[in-house]
Image 1 (tube, rainbow, N blue to C red):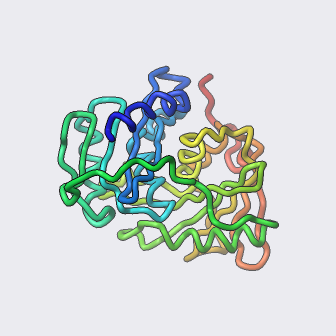
Image 2: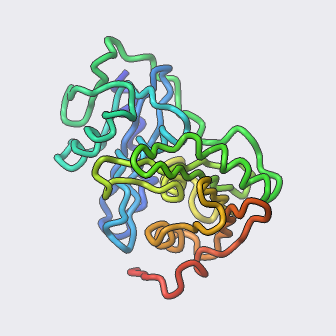
Length: 258
């Protein structure tokens, strides 16, 4: 079973966004029913905003409503940084703790036998979006999956593809707040991991359900959004009438390295 998953890692490595280090990384998380979720390394011109492959895969699982992770497989040996990331997520987020079978494979301590791999879990939200108002309404529903035990500020978004399907994203907090991931970056990381690059993105619908009147993407998310798709339409929840701005207009004079 592990060999089956290892064989999948190579194709995900090709999806990593690593224009600066040129060192792709990938991760797979296996769920209790045998489906898996991929994650790839997503770099940014502002290097500290890089999303590691393991964080990408785990936060995608949260956004897809799946916390039943039974195994983790990595393309690179687990280092101290990623071990700390995983340990922080095990407290109150995922149902099991993990033991290291080897430095690239971890298994849930509550799992005596791995399920037979079934394939890649679909990344899509169940409903299609007809217009911006519907997109915001669905983003509010997505926010219910957020993991925000400290801020108590759930955020949900949907990244719509040209084909019409939407990829959800939620904010996922970590005890080390530098490892917290916002909803927008969560959705972007998921899209890239599943092979949907920015030329396939149509719009992003965003709802900060506790403050719909004023909130907008944070500076970190603006930087990541604009690097991938400067003209992407960002629809923001304003309760009655959604407000739209392009990613570039949210961050004038944004930083580029390439």
